[in-house]
Image 1: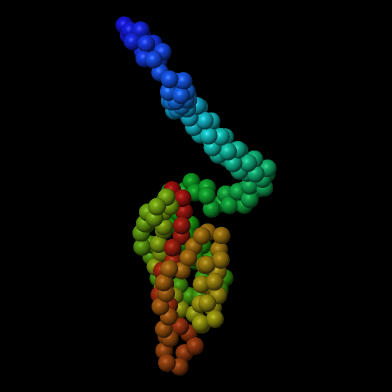
Image 2: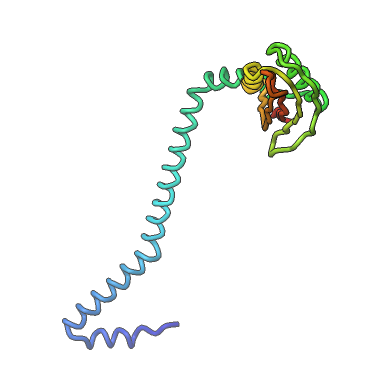
Length: 185
């Protein structure tokens, strides 16, 4: 146990000015300890909680904005269900793509010489079905066919193409092209 009698004797022997300085020093040390051990941790915790509250309020405002547009989002997503809902197998997808390309070729008066599936590539979360075509037609009909492929609702794209004239004096062009279709697995 700490003996306080020697401390009391020292305090009693101090002059009034020394007692004031000692009391001020003890008060300063006590206030500093109180600040470091009690007040600062409380205010620090309050500041952290305020930041968390501010972040949650921001998240709630964003979520409320999305919820207020829920009906619009649902109607917009229904427009794209045909792109997202792919329940067909890979062979069925390729067969459907080949049939669509044949239909587009006949609508645009393009003569299909050869049409071969070139495989399936996994590109991230989607599958890319690739078809190689050889065809003949006048240039304006080839361009119309390419436009029809690009603007179809099947998400098909002309990946690459090579056009050359069938003969020197002919207005008919030969075209080799690679077409791909993107679908969710």
